[in-house]
Length: 445
Figure 1 (cartoon, rainbow, N blue to C red):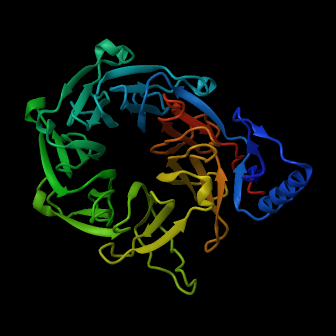
Figure 2 (cartoon, rainbow, N blue to C red; figure 1 turned 45 degrees about the horizontal axis):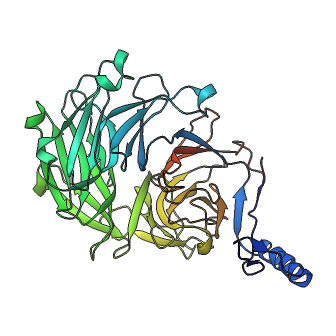
Figure 3 (tube, rainbow, N blue to C red; figure 1 turned 180 degrees about the vertical axis):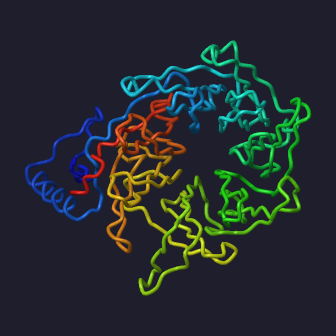
């Protein structure tokens, strides 16, 4: 297996800048002391870098790539992407080119204009067996836009896609995030959507009949929805909603419990899960079937139905584990991402077995990752109760990263890291992925 080695460290104040702004070498004594300091730091700081994380660009031709969602849109068994480009006001789809060409830019089509787009989602909204795209637009646009897909033979033709504003959404709020709540054969599709102030809210969009007959049911007030996931939190067979609300006094992670009424607003009950009052960012959810050791390591928390992780902007991750009854208080663990000075501010977290040893790692993306800080890192735990070790992925290139997807893009049976970056050298790195260097199944270190 490729070795995971310590990242190089350049101690501050060992060099001064001349009039040209270039470093002027210090005297020999300072160099000797500097070398000693470097050795001491490298043998004591828990900051490591997995060798060989190579970055590959899917598309960097527009500005403001803002989140990426997945689906097999063309039925070839490979994952396809949809991305909203906020600053360019467009939404684009990307079709997996096959494993032999996956490290080159992907075939793409602009599915339509989407001013101030924050999120885009694959979903069949007109029941024609073709995946359409729903764009969530904020700013002055304040609307949901649907990009209806053409026949499969014209999927790559931008002129064949049709874009329309969803009337019941127009001017209502600044739409931020969407997830499919119901996509059952023979029933109309329902999409959960969230927004931010003014008039921030979470609700359900029912795509039934002609576009002008679609309806929206408001479920809860919010301030700034960062992340939204349709999952069966309580294991009762229906879809609930998890979401992170970023701002104001009510910020935190919430569960909207579906008590059986579905599209009836009064049949939903809101529960605070954790991170109350914190600036929560993107979350990830995993259904669990194991007993998580308590902090005392003397007993186990109940079986639990699931576990979620959410990034906290102030360089933390909250690990929230559901008890047997998720209406009871959740177990909360706060993970301080250290060394904090080496990374940006936390943005998104995703969970998965990165190194193939059967244990989950955490992948964190960051914003405000001005060089030499890193914007994407992996956290790996040393034992169930051990310290989280941090491993660099992106290096110093990239400033504002976004939502993370862990997916095997190159067909080598390990999880790669798919994300977006929108601030590097003005235009941003765009839609990118980092190839996992791990040899799956080899747990040697």
